Image (cartoon, rainbow, N blue to C red; front, side, top):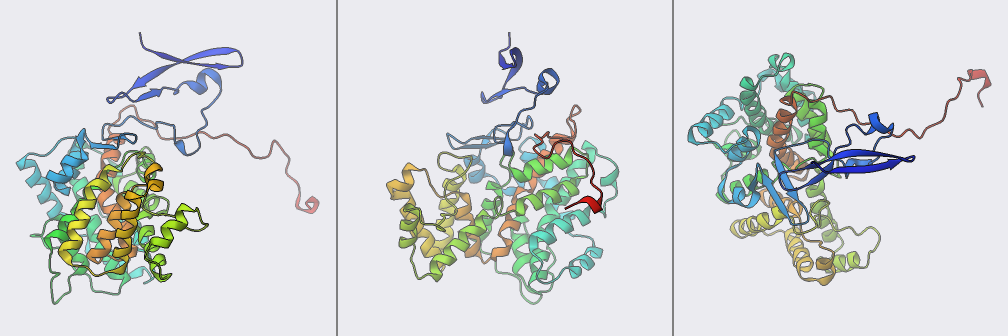
Length: 429
């Protein structure tokens, strides 16, 4: 007999079934709560609400666990490429050799955007943020594939997914070049995914960008570690839009808009801004950390701790070594990176930060890596969006293939004025 949870309302008792996930996660199915009781559950920010059942990503924040399709992130980071991880998330399996070649070929064949889209890039002012351009251009790209608007099929989804993953980096690189007034650099089919992005970002018409294997691997690692992270703000947004049966490109564009917010995807940018402020003040980081410990107003430690992880962010453990290897290999002389290493050392050894579990998170290290590679601050969140695209696509696919799925429609508790009457304008105060 299945377990039931009881809720007493106005002297009446109601029962609702327990749900248990694969990893023994517990939930209470309140889908009939309003029908049975006339009440709804109030949970501002959905912090305690399971909005869906998903087979994509598992997180245990207490134990510091992150798995894609059941595979620990540590194994994927060590052994897989970003393209393999993207296939795993979207297709629910690691690709064999033939499948990986076919998917890689699809990425290559679809990496060019339609030439007519160049006109849209020219319409943006030079001050336009790359995230604004990215969202608008992803949505515009969908217009060139009218079959997207009219139907969804499992057969065509692989090519649509490959098209979006391939083109998001092309659009992102074009956005950066546009914002800097630089000529557009087209992708080259013989470069792999991440190397091609760096080529489009930093090459010139007269000279290709000099590829550094450590830089390519570090950026590929950032993409892998950001590929999905369960039901965060942007992923939930993608699922919300997908539930209306909007097309894949429109749903992904909505995800970009959600990710743009400084409370979400802007965290790695906030890390560098913090380091810049410390440097401008003439501090080496020591006084700043003391101010944080003393809870001095305006002193916030960015890139440390995590809302979900109450232990060390497993992604941070992985990327820390990548960051150290990159800085050592590039021989970067940057005072901001020196300050970052001093903050990290303090946080990992000071009892104040250890007791509060304020460990460096993935945003701390990814921001440092991107700065070391030469990626400008305004592109940090764009990099996040490129990495997160496979997760958004996998969640979109999960929504569209759920035959029992309904359009997402949260309820609310109304706290406005009670019933009142219209007052003619001559009688209003």
